[in-house]
Image (cartoon, rainbow, N blue to C red; front, side, top):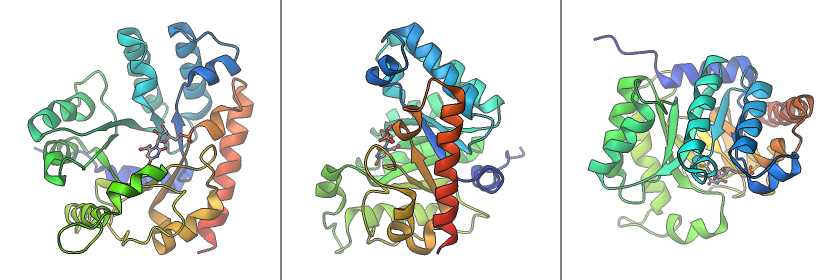
Length: 280
Ligand SMILES: O=C(O)c1cc(=O)[nH]c(=O)n1[C@@H]1O[C@H](COP(=O)(O)O)[C@@H](O)[C@H]1O
């Protein structure tokens, strides 16, 4: 059996050719209203279609946040399925932001949902939580490699409450987040140009204060609405900034529904990110 091209290779190519920006598709009720849409499935569908049409042919990654679709039940999931397929067809990598985490046998079902090629929600990568134990993620890690997909594992999240858990000291004296990052580095060892396991590290954190040398991508949410800026990236990530995929949701989406407004906002973030990375 020949394995598909790796996620790391596909992501690196997308970052090199399109720039590393990830735009999140987060159809908040308040954004639907601001776009002149109803907070219903039709509004969700128009919001999502407009965002995909505006951005899927130019940004490296689109990251739909599953909760905003799930809240409309099966019809919302249908909108999500269509968006994933259309975004991928237009050349964007789709990172499904589902933040799944469960015991390993259930994690296998999540892995099939997002990472098995014949699934209606098949995506290029998915976000997961390792805080049921890194080993509980094994089915997702294995399925990702089989499908040429990625898994983004929460390490240090952008919300202030995260530190209580993630900065706590694990057996052996390291922070819990560092233990998880060490597992990710082990998964990615030897992969070229990047391994399939990414870490999620908030751009809001100041100096991350952990070893981010995991040979994998680093998703950096928190830019825009949560207060971080692209100029903060070198301070948080240091030399690892070249592997960072900075992520913005509301900071771009608030410029819709005008397609040009969305594209210009994404281009401004992309320019600021390029300048910040070049400064390191
Ligand atoms: O995994 C994520 O994407 C994520 C991790 C994290 O630590 N913080 C974080 O904000 N996110 C997600 O990133 C998006 C941030 O949205 P904005 O604050 O509007 O840019 C939301 O969909 C969050 O769920």
